[in-house]
Length: 203
Image 1: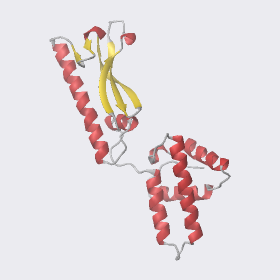
Image 2: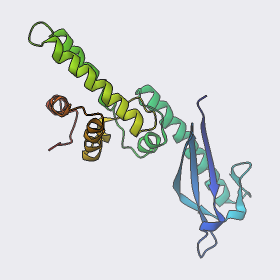
Image 3: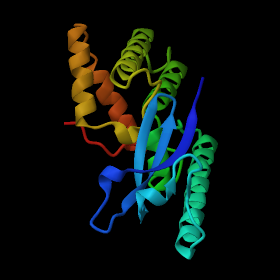
């Protein structure tokens, strides 16, 4: 069952010399949790953890409560945008969306590899031989298995997450299976670079 929970907390352990602690936004999505420091501080004794509000009727309390409501709205707005863009709703993606790092649909690695293999299949018997197509399917399956292993069951990753560490790890993974698909991945890399989908250089 999917879970999505938003809450605020004020830790007494983070109190400053003025007796105030930063207000944090806690975001829990499935089994993943992250904390975001908000640009507001308050005395821990003034925060009602159960009601999720700042106690009192002062102008400061009113302003802070309005701020908390605004931040909560921004969280759900970010969630809606991710869903509309068909991007997985994860803590990392939520933070990126809220910080303006995601402005359009990001390409996914396996998604593009599937498109690549589809185009390859259409050329089978013309400019592509069936054994070559089968090798690409096998390479795709190993890449899919590696992503699930490295990213705790994730089905795909964004191209922005592909870096030298990911590539080196994938090559090591293939070596442990006594398989060499380096050339296939290089071909895929060139395809991404040609379409300007990938800005990572593998050398």
